[in-house]
Amino acid sequence: MTTTTGQRGEPEASPPAPLISVRDLSVTYDVARTGKRLIAIEGVDLDVHEGEFVTVLGPSGCGKTTFMNVVAGLVKPSTGTVLVDGSPVTGPGPDRAVVFQDYALLPWRTVFDNVKFGLEMQKGLKGEGWRDRVQEAIEMVGLAGFESSYPRELSGGMQQRVGLARAFVAEPRILLMDEPLGAVDALTREVMRDEIDKLIQKTGKTVLFITHSIEEAILLGDRIVVFKSHPGAIKEVIETGLERPRSERSVQHDPRFLELRDHLWEALQGEATAAAVSK
Ligand SMILES: Nc1ncnc2c1ncn2[C@@H]1O[C@H](COP(=O)(O)OP(=O)(O)OP(=O)(O)O)[C@@H](O)[C@H]1O
Ligand SMILES: [Mg+2]
Image (cartoon, rainbow, N blue to C red):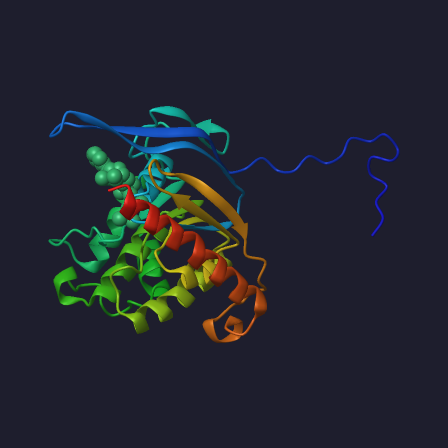
């Protein structure tokens, strides 16, 4: 491949600015009960570009949720900066939506009204067409027919779909997903993982996705961020480099998949051992 750019003294095209830019981020919690301060994360640097799917792996308590909450605007940095599209994050905004592990649905609202809540929180219900948007989001996650159901009448997987629809309805640029499949059974998890993958590839969203599953991190991510604990920090960032679409079946004999899986197992096992020793 040849290129003339630069050879004639023209400026090289600069790479696009990252959509999320995290620099030297630390979060310290004051634990009132013990009167101690706890460094949850320290010195985190990460750039995420538009359209990237970044998965986050790490031992329990290493600060993954804290990190995501800072990007969401729900937790303030103790030091460092988080920029989204060049502007500092000062709180939640319509450009970012969060999918929580425990669904966080409103039990007294129907499926339709829970998804509608995603619009109320972000952009409000001004103008025409909000009903259609809520309905579209419900259909997108396969819950047509359940609009009038209450969360208690749904399975865990269905409740998580409501959480996804609520996040998608306001059409955020960035989806922040904290173990969204952690509480569903293995089969549902596999089905939903593939559905999320398809939705993201179709809509071109930028995603930060926390998981405890190594396979999930590899199957979904363009890059995998591995956290370490004590204090929480980024241990390494790995490009997956696997072709899409990926399925468990299509990649299970791929040498790159096996290499990544072995590497991540070792990295996380080392972290889990370190965490146990330091307790
Ligand atoms: N609001 C809080 N106040 C005090 N300490 C907190 C608070 N939230 C989190 N922590 C502490 O910060 C550390 C990181 O917690 P965090 O929830 O970010 O970890 P995590 O990597 O998401 O863990 P898990 O994988 O178990 O969800 C933990 O030691 C936790 O006890
Ligand atoms: Mg967490």
